[in-house]
Length: 285
Length: 277
Ligand SMILES: Nc1ncnc2c1ncn2[C@@H]1O[C@H](COP(=O)(O)OP(=O)(O)OP(=O)(O)O)[C@@H](O)[C@H]1O
Ligand SMILES: [Mg+2]
Image (cartoon, rainbow over all chains, first blue to last red; front, side, top):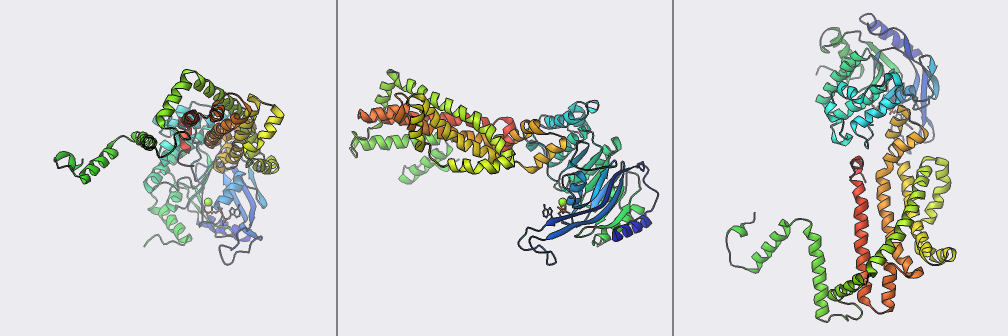
């Protein structure tokens, strides 16, 4: 608690401007002293300081985080620090070892169609066409939210590919199709675990643009894991940097800037540089 | 293009071999198996003419062809094939109807799986032929013991394969499905079944092959019709040509059955799994 609240203060001190205009200020997700430990099963621990087999390994250490309605949060941290574990706990796919997660004031017990998870791998059902996949999302939506599948295909620019099977379209299109299926369910919250990590650089940049367009259309609360700091600076309202294991909140950067953003200039550029340095990378080499 | 085509050359054994090679490689692929069949038949017939073996115990292809003419004309070949196919169809369908739902259930319920899977694994390696005495004791003679044997032979591989297909579904699909809000029966029908269908179809193919193997063995014992009966009856009558005709018919029908089930694998919503197995 000590360390994370201390970093919160420094992060607030670093904030350049007032809170982002889009956020209503209502807390959507509250993470309270969330901790998670696993029993080490590896015969030989990965790192020298790790405990031996059968002992507890602490992955998350009392994480506190408040996320406002409509906020776009980017989670950044070194590989293996526990980002996916944190997101899985918040989404209800995993049970925390200690602490709790409240969404709309209610403790999270299990995954819900109101909170959709986009995984790193493509989770379109391969036995259904793109349109049928989206159809599946529409069926799960509340009756008043249901719109024809074509609308969602159009939304992500895949109107020509409704009859294709997932293995017949490119990786980027697959991500967009899955995003369309997800949006068809009209969730309040999106959890995205490195959704574009498997794509090439160009496609990833196009995806950023696509995300921005979609977010302008329908403001959702988003928790997004990435390794790509530029992606984070480009899209986020706040960047949360997690420390190495056991993960705590190391630092939070506020980005109350409107889009479109030039991530190399002005205050944004300065924050980008700080974020790089915070991750132990020199942005100017 | 081979240069040997363009420039006429004196025929030497080497260039003859080259042009033969060229011919073999340029012919459509479907010719290859036919060529292999033709060569085997030619060697077999040649050896028979040269008297390399006694045609009494192993007739020549031409003798078999005349034997085949005989059983086609007196209607036995068709009747017996239908009799065998009938037993296979009934036994195999029964197995499919019982084994696939059971396999889905076992794969889905960890407790049932832990309790029953070792039992299935234990029964599976017992050859269906070992059940013949039991089948005859329970069902007497006629179609029923044969159908029972086919049922058993197809049941175990189908149930085990279905259960393991369910336990091997990519967790990602199940997570996505629960996130979408699918539960219970809808989850099984909309996600579990289609996700396992490709492996189920492979095991359908394998079990149909086993069923076809077993029907012949079963017909050698308990019935008076079918291709297995043709073989055993002809052997007793010392008609080796008809024994071979029976074998050929079994092989040919087996190929057709397999091809038929293979067609399922190329259905559009099944292609995703091709290359994964
Ligand atoms: N089910 C589990 N049992 C034991 N240890 C686990 C389990 N799941 C995750 N871990 C461990 O927890 C740590 C954090 O994993 P996690 O997947 O959350 O990391 P991450 O930050 O998402 O990494 P990456 O950026 O590589 O995706 C890892 O060291 C991993 O070995
Ligand atoms: Mg991860």
